[in-house]
Image 1: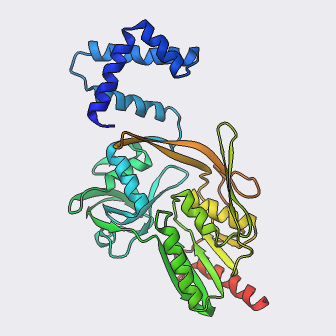
Image 2: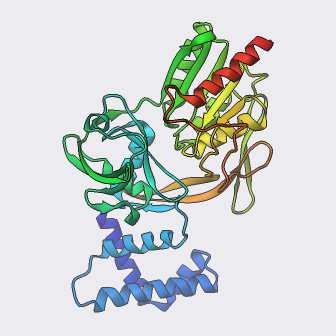
Image 3: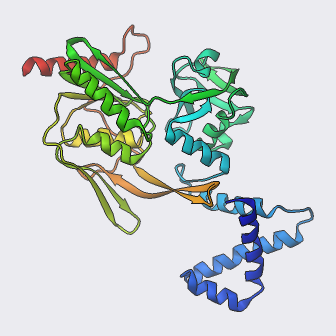
Length: 383
């Protein structure tokens, strides 16, 4: 919402409070019940009181911004928040897969701590010495405890060529690291062929191009003689539901992939028409696998299309939508919960793997991937 429009809204609020007849029309036109109308009056009265009586000059736009932000924060939902123009732009860039930043993937654990869970090759973050597992304490001196997760991502990003200072904790010691931002083109899918013709595909997030990237990787591995597949969703924070569903249609057999249920109980179901999976499949997850990652792994687990290996996932079983406010700011709001094909909600609990195994940081190899290869080799030998 641009400044002119927000100012217009502020003026309209003043006009509304001055006219009883106008209030009546608004009351019926917007469908408020008596309590809703009373609450609207409280807001308008407070706005008018601040606007006319506060000792210093006020900014009408900031007052409205603060009111919207306060409403969303009162929900106590970490996945719903008011997006300033900068935050909204950052979110859209992330979805599109191109932005200016430092080239790291951040994740929030169940204690609301933010860690670096992935670093792009040759990215500014890697060059500056950031490491996976670093806990981010502050961005440019502002503690992350004072920001929503989306705000942290927004502050980390910025114009290419500018610096950002991250205060991190590593090995129980705090340190400041200065990183120069650069333009980042996020490739969300990586793949390779492993021993015994076992294919490996890693998906780092579900953005607009991810389904196409996945199909290219899948077909390339198929052309190389793939006989089984490891799908790595570790540290994948989620992304677009539609992208996740498109990928699931290549892996999940005919039937339900996920169902979405809103406040009114309306149910929307996404389904696969695949006759049967082409290859034996193992999916790797960990505590930072969230949202769309859990939809995909949950569908694979419930339909027995593959084996889930790793650690229990994050547990984000809700769906958000974004309401643009005249193209510059927006509200992101949780509007529904999703359920796996068996009807379970994983909100707050996560996906429990079929085979629980920790990633041994002291090992010379990836212990979770090693287990995946062991399982697939056994399946191939039995066929």
